[in-house]
Image 1 (tube, chains in turn green, red):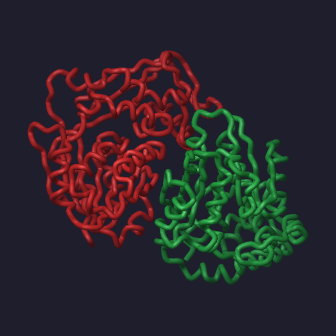
Image 2 (cartoon, helix red, strand yellow):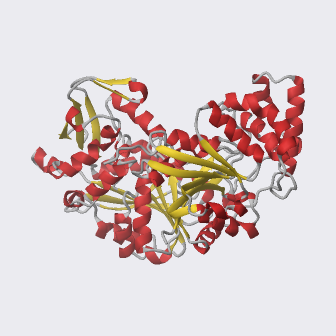
Image 3 (cartoon, chains in turn brown, cyan):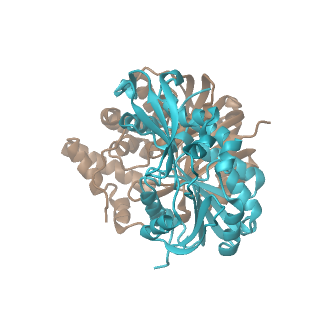
Length: 289
Length: 306
């Protein structure tokens, strides 16, 4: 059964409230890339701002203290760094980088294969008067960005790819890093996933849970809004797939094969989308030469 | 030197606590303080206060000699003592995985590097946690089918509430875990200076004051003293503020002139006192070593299966 009261720790509520409906229209007109085993990512990007608003999908803010530590550690004494967010989904990672490193000069590039994700980042950047460089590129086509960045960050990205692609994804990300550069990320750890309740299965069928419904009422969603939300959430739940690493050894093998070392690895149990969820938090370092 | 916190949460929480007169020692291991602590840990005076490697190694060889164990360590510090223990015991051949648990990610990065330098093939994991305040939810689930041996060496005397910390450790580890606890032993050393002399140096002062410096309090704005508290049987370090100063986000916390902030604590324990703390925590007491000429009490404990 649901063990948590309604969560009130959603971030960027104002932006998500403003953009979730326009995201549906924008995604349907502009999404055109394959994603997560489907031919078009519109089901993902149409739903994402809504699901973030309702706080029912993974958020990098579960790992906020880790990202702050990892970014500050990676920057060290430098006063200027080049950072890329790869696989952005929305602006949360760019926001975390900007908040954490506000006292130095940071050049943030946001790289995603889909125009819609970049559109969300542009909205956030314009509202906050922050300069970003949006680049519409798949992670499989980042050759032109070779050795461009001190740091690449990405939240829960590697589990979007099947086992056969993971090593290639790490290879591509590594290629964008300068020698000694760092890839900071999180990976869902299925190796000790706790028992999932029956409600999770029903959530998957119906698209939204009681928590989300309560959140919609508190945000004064109209009946039409609720119908739209249920519809797009259902599509999301139907299409989303995760491809876990078989075990933690596999992560290290993938890294070694691509001249990356695991500099730091941390286990954590986050509050999760529906239930407490184990994650692995990683800092991977590109070998200097 | 760059002064920084690992995360904004540490900054905000420490500012709030310092305003109440206490800077918990765990902040002296985190952020930029991890570097000053490392310098201290490598100093002669620090090593002279610590730790009874021979006796600890004997206990480990006696009670932890199984294959394929998961070694868990609460507060590994720089990892140097961990490396020495691994080198001196059968553990180095028997571990499936080493897991460190610490309040400071920055310090664990140092510990990980030290451990991996000596044992490159060792599987090293980490949980970031504050066992002073709570147990780690989920840890016992992850390790419930593993054979867990845990260490907590030279940590329990430096926390704000030893009893609470040990109870949280008890709740964290899975059933059937066996552990080795080590704390500084109380001995009547005579003159107060015998307790405080090892702490009377610039390296110690720099390490103890680094968290307060990171809050924006300059060294010239405070004096540091080290005292022996006979009632608590503890060595305590205090920073005394020389002038009114504001700290924290938007300067919302005021430190007034002459305010004393405790920034260091190191408790000593009587043997029976520590036995009682162990029993209160829920652990089953297995064995201990408290030789007259040793500076530590080493205690093997177990969390029962049921």
